[in-house]
Image (cartoon, rainbow, N blue to C red; front, side, top):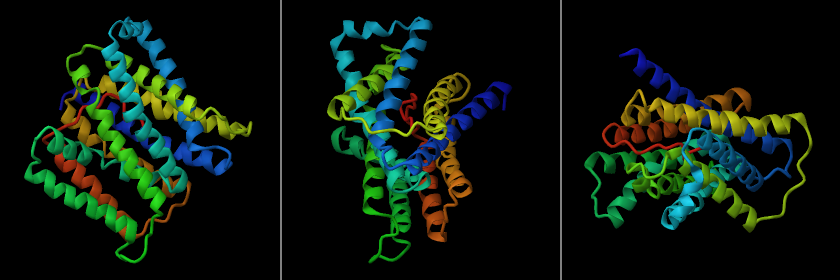
Length: 306
């Protein structure tokens, strides 16, 4: 392995680890006060990160305002933000709020299977045998996590399962909507993600303008900055730059560090008790997703900011 490939691999491992850690910051925020909501975290994170990324793109010479010269591109980016980034971020934070960062990240990790289902249903691309087998294994893992093997009892609340699946669907739409635009390099990925975040955050603000009373405590702003910087800005830059040195397949395989870091952090920081069923279910999901990514890597443009 060349030095550049080692560097790229380390960069993507750090990026995925930081994405997993962002859920821990969110859980710490929700534990501070019930007035801190997933909606507020999502709105403020999206708007702040969007503005910062667009400023960075301007300094890089990407000319972010040029998207408004092509209304089709602007609408695609808005759709990417609202139908991709909103469910993947708001759904994830809701799952964290009602559950924990570990299970939320594992459920979100199912996103590629919703992409496969969409391609089969609407683009008539039949799934390969490995994808069908992996899907059965992955959802068996979710079943084990949710029931602990007891079909008459849910070990995970329906709200956690629901919002985790919303986040997983968001991973799929987050990948599919801007795919053509990014493949043709018509608009730089930094501009797409920056405007997508800003559009999505402003849309959520318009839909839910009422703001909660946020306790003015150091831990609140430390955790919020952790979500913004460690969970958004740094991993986005690392992930994009890592693709200069490694291929997308390697990137996809390293994505497993996201649920791994969220799980380890939840156990160490929040003393999450992982049962044998939790561990088995999580391993099945992660292994199943890795199996399909070995041959069909999904584009990762930084949009999956969990």
